[in-house]
Length: 232
Image (tube, rainbow, N blue to C red):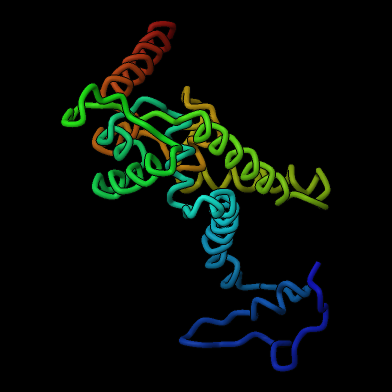
């Protein structure tokens, strides 16, 4: 429910610009009919980006007292999900430049939130882990982010949520018929989805989980497909 239900003067009728006719967004929010769907069709990606921005602000707020940013919070969550990765593996996991990963991990270690298991200071091969304090902070980030996302549905009747779920799932099928492969994967923790992690069957280079795990998952799916054909 908008705070001011009155449509502002000059916004009562559709506006036409550059050959596109649309109702102003404020008028739509106050009940005007968007017959052309020009606004909402283009607004949907912005809407989800906005929700993502809000949740990332929550993540940033969780680490602000440590002098850290939302980027550091993302790495804390990632290490919490997949502790023991090397710098290269962590960069691949998040699909972020290795130089940036090196800088972020260095800061986390300086703050006493992460450490590595290198046997000597000159060792180049090592894995990244969270300290007890880092683990507690990562758990806090994930819990408060989850609470924020649950809050998106506050005051919305269950039948409306169910209708929205149906609509969004139908949209996903329309734009990405193969998305079911991801939601049926073994990466069930919702934060894997939130961090936009997944694999691409046709492009192994897009994989974020490591070559060995990719081959294992690919082999499992090929075996399942073979059994399904054999039953026919």
